[in-house]
Image (tube, rainbow, N blue to C red; front, side):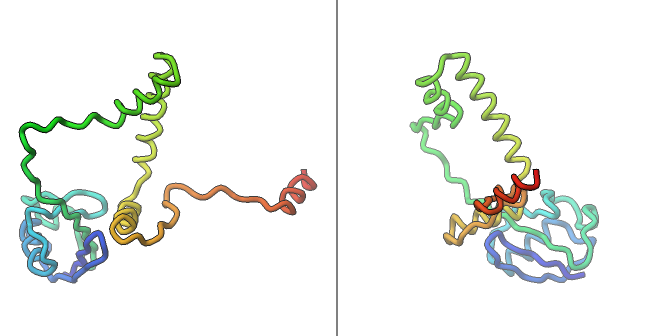
Length: 165
């Protein structure tokens, strides 16, 4: 069967493989064709991370399927004397504390965390690809799939709406 393997920024190739091939072997083929080291590859099928020790058939990957490759950077050992950065929520709490009391600050942080989590749940792989493309190439962003733009009414349309009511 043939699979399409694509990198986040659009490079792609077609590979002929068997359903009994292991994910590790697929990574080797991807490495040869797209020049991405195996240890830097995360292979995804329908949003699911593929484990090296599994076979393609274990994920029900069939002919003409599309596999996404997320390239993770090589990890550099952190210098021992560097401090870990404070999390975003800590900094946000400090800013909010300048303007609100302790209880209101905590309530705002909880609300923002909940809203943040809900937004993250709506992000698709396509949205992430588009964001990466924008950050790396400065192409304009399209509207995310999880949300739509609010309707802008012209003065005439507002009058029409009022007339209907």
